[in-house]
Image 1 (cartoon, helix red, strand yellow):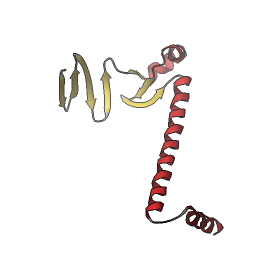
Image 2 (cartoon, helix red, strand yellow):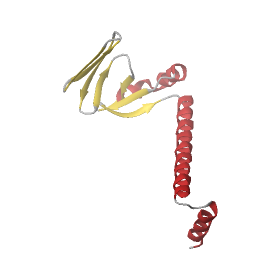
Image 3 (cartoon, helix red, strand yellow):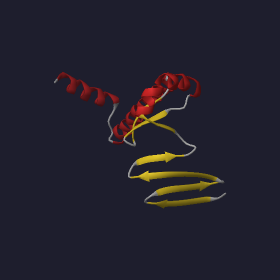
Image 4 (cartoon, rainbow, N blue to C red):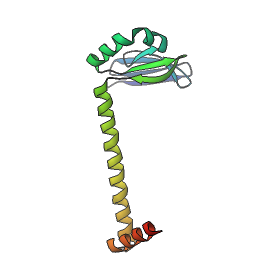
Length: 127
């Protein structure tokens, strides 16, 4: 297994198992990415929007839209968007579930019962 990292101010190289990806990075702006992402300038997107929408429906690969060489937006098909929103909702649910679990552990460690917690909640809501 070959792993080689070479980072310099003007660019980045990454090699792993004979895969070489080169990126030119200026600050946080990626100007060129080979074999990774579809990137297109906003002026070209304006011209090709209709054909891009048809292509997105087939390929399911998002398109990064740049303006003045900086990433500004992502164009993706609707199915990917729905999946992303479902993932976001599930992540929020899991975060809330974990917060509740931690609160229960702290309450138990402090010797509080569920009745104590309910009384506190009623007191706060009545204010």
